[in-house]
Image (tube, rainbow, N blue to C red; front, top):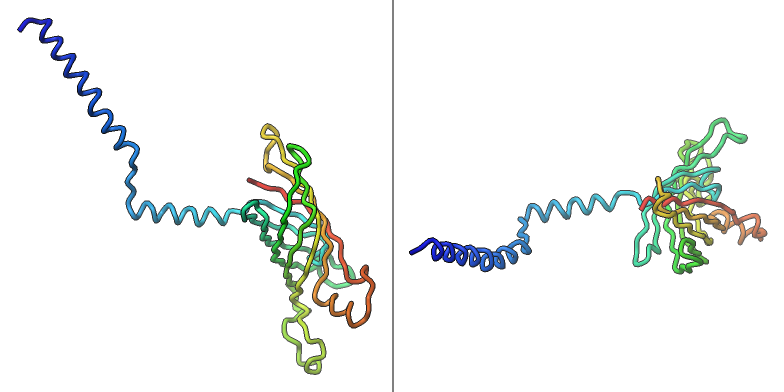
Length: 220
């Protein structure tokens, strides 16, 4: 067998090795087999990643303190639902000490209307929140010094209802630092005690409604 024949057979064999096995290797590369442990770790990591706050909020007034700061999560088909946890500050005013409050909020925004590529309007939002005051002057169960049923409600925990509107500004990619959007909102709220007083004492709306303003800074 001469050199040319030997070279031709070698070339043909190399061509077969490149073509035939390559398809089987490609098919194998597309199939990723993961162990049960790897799948369990992936689910574990995904569950904990859901706990990362999606945004931060700052709010003025609203029965939560003069100023409140907090974090939250939005979810749902179009991020219509929000859950917030906020800490507020009640200044001293006529009391001896300032007070801290804690608030848990749930908000629903059913509609969104784009005003431009970077501005969205939310014509209606509503929700409920509960807050408490960290101070021994307030109580959950009625103290013994009052006749049974004298108050009939807790002074430590308040339940609020609110409605409002908001507008959202998307920040361009090149200008994003800590947030990708800023949402401005206002709310009208009232609490269970105010509603009871409004019914029993025929109060005017300005006596039982509270106006608040806030900013929501979305991280992602």
